[in-house]
Length: 514
Image (tube, rainbow, N blue to C red; front, side, top):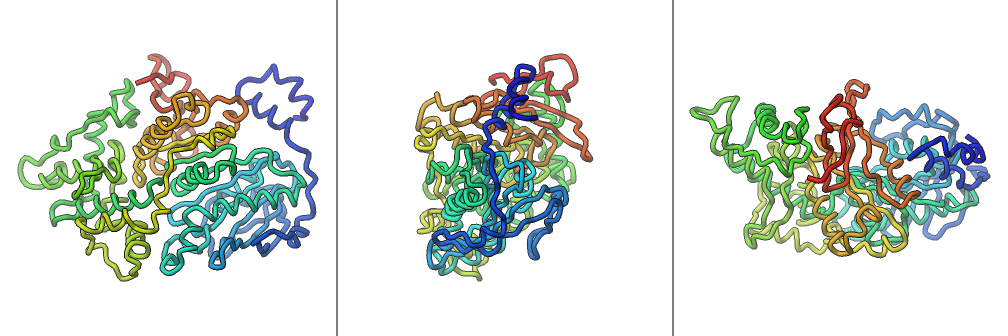
């Protein structure tokens, strides 16, 4: 609606509708320059490789980009800028900046990567532009979702670790200014997994880059995480009879649900708070020979290890908290298959040992744990809980994590949240930082939990009102149709059934301390 109309009728709206209407009223009226003219824009250490006006629905994925189910054919017209950034002689950071040809909301949304990065996040760019944002993404300075480039290229490793995201953000703002004649009035980061780590690193290293940072399933303490993954996988496969076949995962999951699902008062196939679930795998011990419906003694010990923190056998220090929580059993194969996941193997090959021929079977806990943790490339492990400079300028950090994450430990987000609060004070909770745990959600999405929620709307509301949402209504879909809604609660509270009405309706739940 027009700005004056929105203001005149705002008393008829409520909550987020008012917030978004008022935000729309304050958006600058930007008159875009011809997109192609940006090819001549001169920026330090930047080569603009293309400036192309893309008609509505005309964008197609470039050759070599990962396949996607995103609806690019529904995009509005936008200006697409591709550029290469060279902050060092060995840098080759590719970025893309997409800017709506009309209807820009005056804001920049930068989007994150997954795994070892190495690709432009086209689906996330599309989602941002469809929402009216100017958007930016980077391959972090290398091509391909691997780290083979790292040997002999320390500057490229620094680019991937943190510099590329910062450089992209600076230059994206410059490009937005060149196109619209206005700088973004708000800049928001939106990333999950590696993107969550990137966002948290930005908050600590470059506190003025963003006004709001959305960090999902943050893969922080990156080296420690991979070391823990290596330790767990090699323990799981320590003998011929120690690994748990995937065919037994549903049986274990059913037993966990039987023990803990109803603890929240609702039996719905989702454990609301796995931290309160103290499942003992020994109840599944075979009474005789190995069978499909039980665990051998060695497999029982494996299950115990899967739910336990990973500790340095030499010092006893915790390397990472338990990687997997009760409720994650159906996806144990991700970390507990016949060999460590490829990301973990690559860390050891190309960063720790700098030997492409290194084999994970040579992993020696007595020496290779400390070798990794003391590696000179510790920049990948950078995680600073001192976010006071970010908070000081009004920055907001919205964290979220699925309790059934099969790749990145949910307890990592819990631990970091608590550490940030301890380094500042409790007054930052709800004002500058908030964490929302998502029961039943897998890594960044999926699972039996309510994994669908509008993170950007939550952040926009927070920035506008100064208070983090007291709840975020999330949904679960089956075959594309919503069949359950549930509130996501700030950490320390859980969705609690009010005692009447459908347990598939968020309106019948309240966020209460537990």
